[in-house]
Image 1 (cartoon, rainbow, N blue to C red):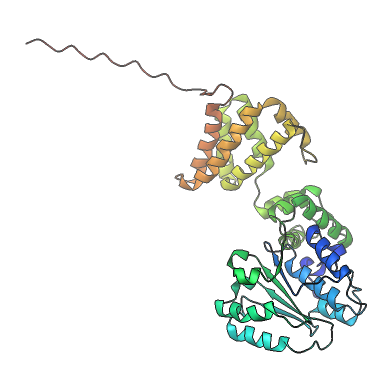
Image 2 (image 1 turned 135 degrees about the horizontal axis):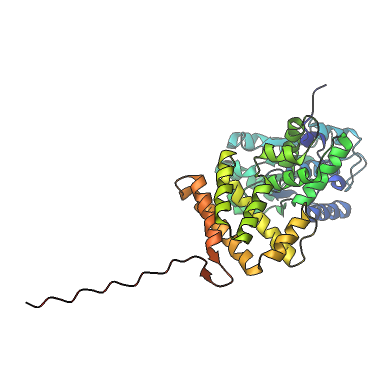
Length: 380
């Protein structure tokens, strides 16, 4: 049997199974239940946050044989056809590959005809910002005075490139990036249903790496299952994502607390031998400092290593922590300017040691030598 990617297999089929985007679901559900439907919707947001998925659910809600409702049955010919991508009155167009005026003119000419099998003709145009200027101009008249049986659903990752004349004719919904805990929770439910063993820490790492995109997270999850031979473990996910061993970061902070510069240099050398990604190491170190700062104010919440975070929260002063964070983030920006990544990383670590924020001075500033006395001019 052909394997189906998790992102496709677990694609939401109704609003109830959709993760996140509650503000969009609430607005569309109320509109469907009260009959206050608009002829054009624009969904914006980064990749993999549910724009096309919501468009398909909306198409099912409009064409379900049980009537227009916020909860389509999912079993009638219209619902199953839209899920399978074969419903004749739900037309999906990729504007990236069909961006010309000829394609748009043909689409609009067909829009005047009544639906063949459903209640509405729903045109889903993905990446609408890729349409040419002439294609947008051809669309304007239909968007302004559409046939009563036509609904346009536009989706874009770059709304700034959509003409204002088009934006003004659409109801616009901005889909938010999904928080890492919500992504991790959804992946845990999927793995439970799939019978795949997993670590909570591994899902947290994938959720952070996905940067708000559920589709990216599920693609990474597929990769992690293959990488781990049927299980998802944090050690293997770290290796797959190229993450830095957390033990190195803990040793760096221990060396800072002890004021041990030799240890900092040894850690940087060990990371070079292990081919660790220094740019990622600085990013992870900044995240660790942020979590320690949260622990200091009692806002940490769930953490994978609360004992370590609390230990550093007590041993590092809050003002020192803030300056450490500033040095690390500045060092990450300056890393490409260093002769090499190892040199730049080592200097960032030594800079952390050199500055003492609590005193406002540097810890080991050499004293300047007194100026040498100038010899008196000889008398002739």
